[in-house]
Length: 510
Image (cartoon, rainbow, N blue to C red; front, side, top):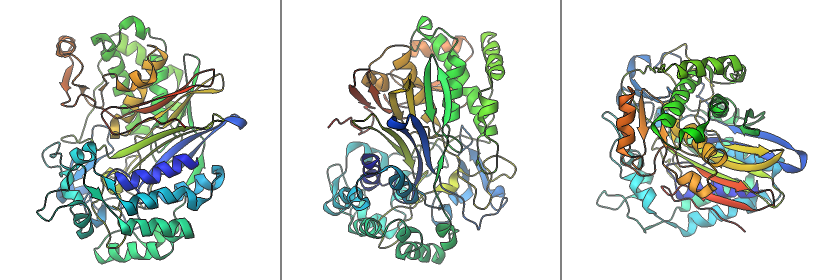
């Protein structure tokens, strides 16, 4: 746990558009000595000032999985009104208090040092900062990065261009914030001077977040989502995350001979994509704030429901997904996996959602863009109501074999997260791939009526899918659709790791 929290905070220092102290996330923990698994959930919440219909008239389009919503003027994703309740620091604190061993201040100190001495911009971070807008009407990342005066000072050259690959980012203000949290605990962030500085800036710019929103936020320990696949136990994050979706897809595929179909053949992609689409429909309809909606597992994992899916797929029925207008897929997220010498495991995924671009003067961190994920239409599982928990696609997971951890994994990637984690598990358990090969293998995703294919999947495969009546499109990137990072454990105590080569992650052993 100490390693997981230290790494999570460091990620927020050196990948500031992906996560940070203003963000939120979830983690699954395997406590090996107790034979127990728990989840520490720290999802963001809507501020108390929201109303269910305040932005309904501004809706322009919706993301493929229904989680992201683009509004006229981008009011819900850029600037002060986009900010929801920061949750990460409370989550780190709760997990450390229950399961950490080192002093809190020592866990945070490496991140303080990293912010103060500086970190070098890597190619993946630079590429992300300078990517053009994915679709018409969307904001470029550079617009978010340069929204605030302090953001421009930290990340831009005087000529208006972002700093370049290899340049060092020194963030003394963030170092001071982290020092304060290390010395005074999470209360400094939620009710102390940091909180007061945040809210003074947000209130002065007509944001929604208040001191009361911060003061009343709590992270929680919850029961993980669970499923079985070919004799393995799959443990993942429950609602409002999407671990039950991962379990559902695995259980729906269990009766099929996937090896016989062949890895990434047209028939394999068709089958798995149909399961992905059906699970996406269920996720939209059933996953939401656990305080307001029933646990979706009873419905989503019902064997009768999954048997009906298989009958439909075997008959060649195609699942249709309806979206509100055009589509958009946010993917601003990070993940990590840790195993210690005692086989305790942590899988943690965290995010800023679509970062708001707000960097309050003197604080050094980018605020979350939580509000982009809430449905501006009333009456849906993710609709805006005061204090409602933000739904996410995150599914950090642990796969167990006879009570022993076998795989610890997670991914960033917005709505593509469960799809990448699913395929990595299939690659290891069905196709026998080593973990590094499993996370690097070409992937595909189906969160809409079009199947998205990695550029490394042959065009001949797309042609055969077209002959079966499927629309598909190739992603321009060789490594696409989430960026899975995973550890695999052997029965003799060895651990191997795989980090998606499309990102800057790495597997370390000590």
